[in-house]
Length: 197
Length: 197
Image (tube, rainbow over all chains, first blue to last red; front, side, top):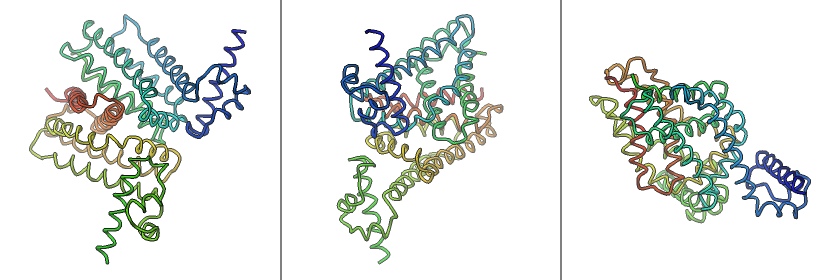
């Protein structure tokens, strides 16, 4: 029973992702998600309180995946600038997966602006990435690859803001072929300025 | 007659800005704009083809103002890093004016994603700012304040992306008091890495 219940939950999440990205968040109803998933409304509400709850669950899943992918590139014996350069190599992949979902994300941000619950879910990953990169910059300073007078929190905040700006730019720009490369160059420009020697 | 016609146009634009920021772009109808402006639908359609046309006009106005404000800080005899530092000083002002209008901008981006006409209006200022800052970095290199091996276009693209990321972050973050200062620090971190000597 446990396994079947998990399967149903998975079907709902998958169906919601399909509906949101096809018709947008606002235009998608619970009925439509149920029809796409082939489950009853009773089953839906057994697993989720609302459409918003499914979205938050989807968002969490994506962010966990992204974090796993980024941290997989983190290796203790490699200098930080090199690690960051490898991470930006995965930008194009993120972009290729996220590209068609821009309207959904924007709708989600509108929701976040209007709803404190969604807002805290939207801001949490931001803070999380800022913390992760601040830790990395600290390591970079102590290993001697980053200048010692750099404020690791400021560097992390700046890197995250740059990544968000690049992502948004890439999503808006039709000339997607070069975006991954151009973004990696921008990150390298920032990191080069922080590098020691 | 010319003057009165311009007044009517101004009233419509002002009313549209009020309605969009209060109720959002999607939820605002031409009737509501007309009622708020105290003009007839005939007068509205004399000046604008559609609600979208008013939005584009508003956007153009804001961007022109922003460009004017930024360029006013540009003075030939001041080193570029100092000019950029002054420009980031005006971040808080931009933010204070734009803050409540985030949902409207996000709705506009959703439209842009779906509509090529809106898209090109949304991407144009991006390119324009990239060009302006690329020119400035060129001057910075030739005046000797920026390292000569810096690619001026890359530096401009990076600066614009960082500014957009910071703006989005600031709009999402409730802790608005420190945002202007924190953003200025991020821009300085990037620019310090490009500075000569």
